[in-house]
Length: 119
Image 1: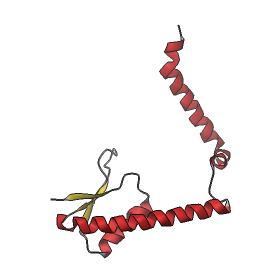
Image 2 (image 1 turned 90 degrees about the vertical axis):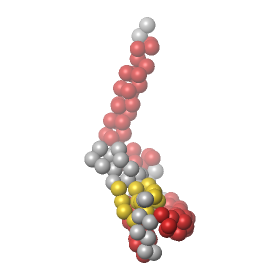
Image 3 (image 1 turned 135 degrees about the vertical axis):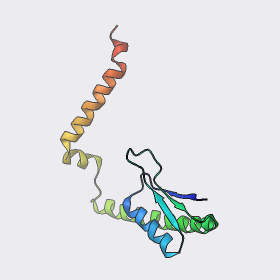
Image 4 (image 1 turned 180 degrees about the horizontal axis):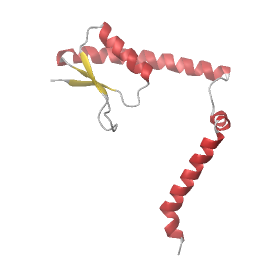
């Protein structure tokens, strides 16, 4: 019986590809499921052979520790050079999108609590 190894929901494409390569390099047999047409299914990597579960989990643990250190170092380097986009820089780059989000939030708030203040 198959066993869930790694969930792919909200995982960046580069990380998912690195996990696939890691498992292939170590000869761990897997298959994948996707989110389906409506995005409600579980996108994940599953083990075909449950005897390899402990080995695969150990490999993934090591990989995720190394990735966290690497990505954090990249983030710190970008931030120290001033190249990491801040909230203000994002707002300046996309002002219409920001205004559209603010308008949508205002409409939702009005529809949600407007009737309480109409007395």
